[in-house]
Length: 263
Image (cartoon, rainbow, N blue to C red; front, side, top):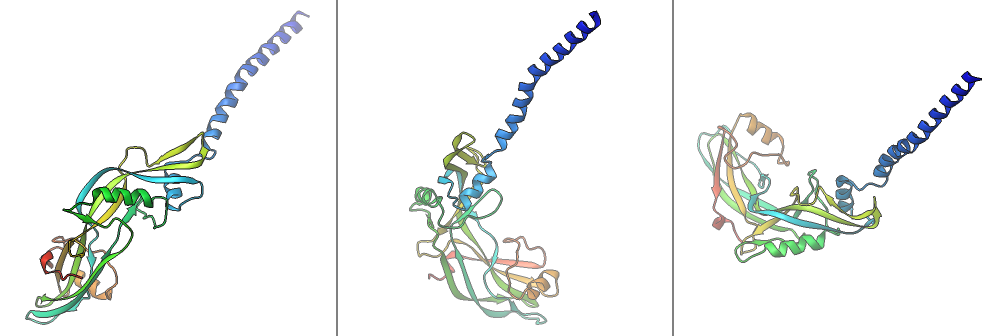
């Protein structure tokens, strides 16, 4: 009887311990489930803003810092004129054209299309950075140039025009307001409040309406890997090095902005 009593007492203690631990274990399981259910992560916030999700009440761009005269991509903006195998320079005529527009770039490198809830805040911020000294493109309308220039292609070289537009780079973060609470709140930030990883590039425009930037004539030595790759591309878009960055087989000559014809 004594042994039986002890055994019963021992089982009773086990039950009490189990009852104490059970709520703690249940709570530990509940927390991750609650955190993962309907969570609005920074990437999800950016995606919702980018896609103009119906879940959003609003999405705003909040500016943190800016940089004027930031140069855009290096673009080949004319056809390629070939002067290979010739031992004298040649004057060639080039048809030059390009266009610029405002770009909203997320931290993952993707760009946001027009017509989203971001439009209002992006435009208003653009108004703030527009001035008499620097005119910028605030909306999503393209500004372009198209003209003909004559210039010299060196002996045994190919020649073409390169362009990099000037822009005002305004960086900041997204503030998204949801219609219904997500994890108990409606306001979320991407990538985080106060960060400067979302960029809005506002192209800078000259007084005559022409996009501002750097235009240069590039000569590339024939028979080099650079020239062969360009000729094989058949004027398709390629990633090109910037001004003065082409290497020993490449010569760049900048064209003054004053020589760029007005539209």
